[in-house]
Image 1 (cartoon, rainbow, N blue to C red):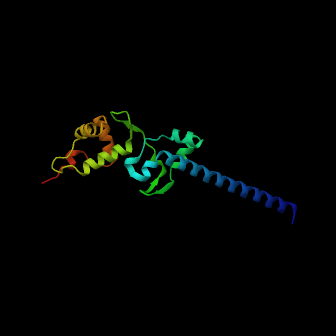
Image 2: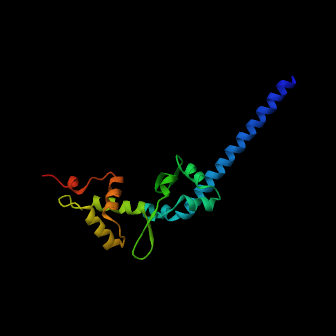
Length: 168
């Protein structure tokens, strides 16, 4: 074997080892970020959407000792199987809304509450966004603006009350 061939083999071997190390580091990073997410979101595993807590990329970046952009990249396009079904990792991140006792509720949970309310409303007299604001405040202690409810309703692809009203 010529020295040129020997050099090519050594170079290819070095590249292969570097690639395997990179793949292993990526695997450890994904695992570390995922474990950190579920350290915070463990209630989700038992309760489903209602157990979600507000969670920011920054919190997981600090826990996993990586940069926020790494957490963002790792959580996009990666899915995890849970007792509640299969979810994209990015779905475990959301901001929070404070209730009257000072406790934070995930915006994902609030959206789920709104969806449930609308699914069980009287089709002859559907809730307006203002009605939903009043119910959230009275029953859950969550104060929010009507336009925020409208935004969440739009995010859920739910039409406004006049379009949900049962037609004769």
